[in-house]
Image (cartoon, rainbow, N blue to C red; front, side, top):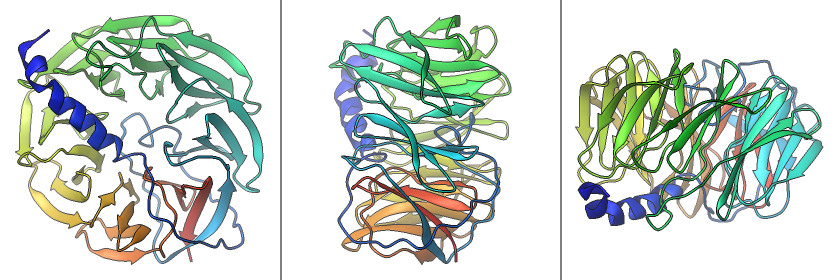
Length: 396
């Protein structure tokens, strides 16, 4: 075991628990009503966690406040600990109560549901397939389903999952699909699977247990283990470069924007050159656990449990800071606005900020929202509630 890993394992475990709350958990209770459903507009799909392979959580759609809840989908069951929804074509996909559910966007009706082993996060949809990770005990899987029927097409099982460090790290990552390859990892193994057959195209073994999902841009795959950020070739799985930290690191999926890779080591954000991994800039947040939250060509967004910062993408200079009392989610970015779920003022809300200034422009009434991040697609902001609902907010 590397010395830094021994010294900072406790810090990693605390960070895991802290940042888990940044994605999933329960919000304060409230009531909501839903207006008549409207027809969704066409858009680029939000077909995987982060919106697409670059994980930037950004779209160029124009969705402007004030908003009202015009769409509703009902799963039922326990959905306090769930991932953001995914949308592709005329369907919406959401996990809940140990199942994956598929809904029609225009009528809100459930088309199918599939029971899956253990816990799972963030479905990814490409063409006629849905890919989802599932993990139960010592077993971890990547499962391919038919998009229209939910029928299982193939299943890949990892040799192992988790880690020897009190099971911190090494869990099955959220899949990303590019050029017919499904990139997914577990334990110390990142693999590329053929999306049609599930056959292994290549595999890469990391030095330590993997702690981030993969991000892909321009035929390069980026992901992290405890002590490294790796850049590997999408087609061959060969390492192009790696960036090493002095202490244990807890990465969410790195963000790729312009010529930079944005990643985090506990309280420090790094902007690395995509070509060789050198540090272009870095910013320290003084013992505050932070994660890369979203990015545009102009601004990178960094969050802690209850604060969000906008930094200039090319320099790392702080543009603005926004804080709530208890919690704020990862954001969804549109052309001019930023949408996020907050827990504050005795309830939970959907809020709109102006990207340029961080000024709050609008907020919903208090709702029963969970902590999963909103997504922006088809003219709507989709958010999740703790009682099994999904709401689609649209411009009034």
